[in-house]
Length: 471
Image 1 (cartoon, rainbow, N blue to C red):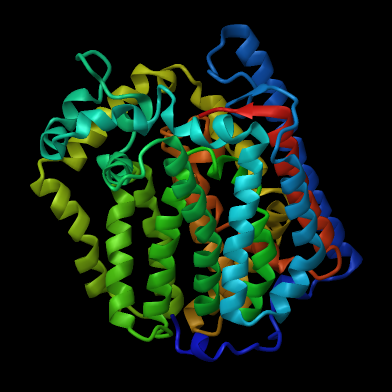
Image 2 (tube, rainbow, N blue to C red; image 1 turned 180 degrees about the vertical axis):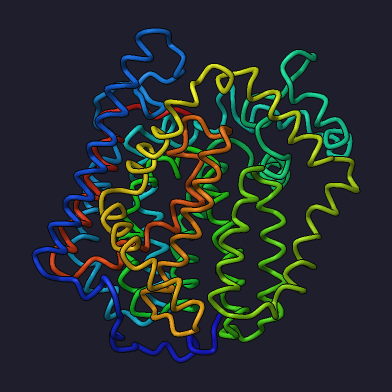
């Protein structure tokens, strides 16, 4: 907690430079043009994807560019999801300004969890929550193979590639064992089964919005953090947060960045503890998903924005804890990663064409981030040159610092895309990066904010009611 949080001040809106002031018709038209370009990208990805998939089936998805199947339906969560969306659109912007800071954080967490859970419940409790992490590809399928955790870790790499007897299911093989051990730990604590695992991911996944707000307040200003809050709550990628472990990964990574932001800006009561905790969570992040090492781009951005390397020593110390523990237990991260690459090309990754997915992934991201984020990213691009100049001179405004943080997230996403190890399913896999793109919507002017929030909710509701999303 920061020293400022203790008194719960309600700061008046602070003036921001750059695109936030562009409230005229020209700026609004450009925002709508950017959103239209996002719609066009999705439409082209769908059309080209259908041609390729019907031609040779190489995309390995049934509703390109998403891993989904056509399945129009309603469900128990439909009224709740619509109610949450209406409430956030109607009252979110006003509450984001008026609520005391700590109460706003708790409200956003509760609203985010309600949004994620209600979307999941559109499929019903069993199909939408309890069953998701127990399918043939998922972590809970191998819980009984971790009765001896030490032996399982020492032999983990023996079962990654397809071929040897007992190879791991896709998600277990595709991630370091930290992900699987999380659910083993829940099982050992008496919280076994898909219901507990699903709620773990939903509740923690909802906290990612809070982590981003904490980081924004420390690195930019409270005004922008408050403006971003409703957009973080109504994130379209909540469709996948409640149906996979990636929401859990997103939260761990986001809190690592947030704690470092508090440590670097000296706005935490115990900056040293925050830096150590940030490193500990970053180390865990790297053992939840190989690709999340790219969160290092956001870590670097925090230090650059704070103009200090002071927390780096304690951060590094904390970051060594999880890797050291796994290495001593017999798991070799680098060996496992190289075997994962082999496994990736043994499966769908070996047939999915890079030439399609390298740009169609961005269509998936458009659906996961929403049209408000696309419009906000246009404003980020406009602010970027001045932001980089201000960063060098130390005179960057809050808006420009937000632009730098957003650019760091986009850089991580771009590297993941160009690597060829993220062909399809990025609507789910890239959540830890996309959550840092969402605050770009804070740059949109007050005029039309509820319209943009409505667009965010409509994307999620349409996807969840018209499609059965994979995993």
